[in-house]
Image 1 (cartoon, rainbow, N blue to C red):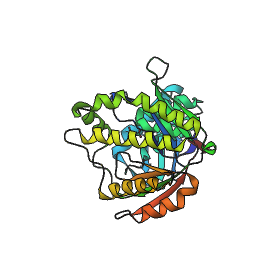
Image 2 (image 1 turned 30 degrees about the horizontal axis):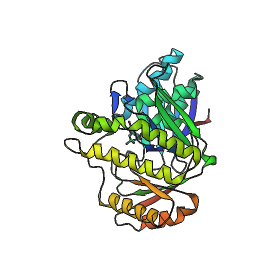
Image 3 (image 1 turned 60 degrees about the vertical axis):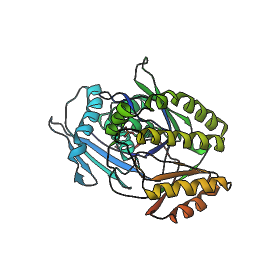
Image 4 (image 1 turned 90 degrees about the horizontal axis):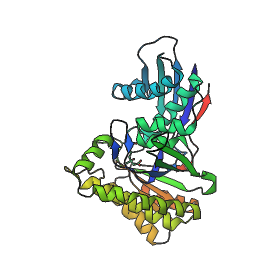
Length: 324
Ligand code: PMV
């Protein structure tokens, strides 16, 4: 009753921000992402034969702030099998946790995958994705590799359906992550989303424009049209940050180096380099580029004032069991 799974963070190109149901954690909009291969979460789950409290270690330490979410997530798998035995969970990230690098996405994707394998539950990947979604909206997308879309399916058997829309090998883009601050973010995404929905005068337009962005991105990916994907992705990112900024009090996730990186990426793109930026609920800038542009993009970002480190990645696989 033990299994270890790995999963990678993903980066949304068409963003999700806002929930239609906070209790059940249902996103207000669909989203589209790429899964990375350069950053990895490894999670082991061991089930005991006894009932009792779960144990959760993150990076070798107790993480009381996360323990409740971890237990509720494993409960979804335990409920499918009809058992109430306790789990010992150990999770490690090879990148900074909770700094806008989507560690909750890879974390919960690896967790449901390992828990399913350890209990031999045989849950389908689409359903595992929906279980991971209940813990963290973006985690559903890390179940799959390459280009991934999460769709809202309120009338279906599951609240969301996530699927791969293109394999990573079909369009092997690369990503340079400019790390500008390694501290945890000031305001978590759920609190930020609730505040945005309640107070931003632009929230309804943000939600209403998402379907069109998703369709545009889907088309661009099907055609391997880099420029079209760059346009719609940058627009989705800036729109998301504009609803964050227009909340009261406004959510400012960026720092000076974030803006410096965005400007540098825009300059490169204006000079004909195939690269675009995206930024999540944190200060890091992810520059997505064609493989041949990667070295130049990474070197230019490393020179921007305030950039601490540039992490490099290609597109990766979905969550998978590595032992057990
Ligand atoms: O996965 P959550 O619920 O913490 O939300 C993440 C939201 C963004 O990363 C900002 C956007 C996205 O779609 O991943």
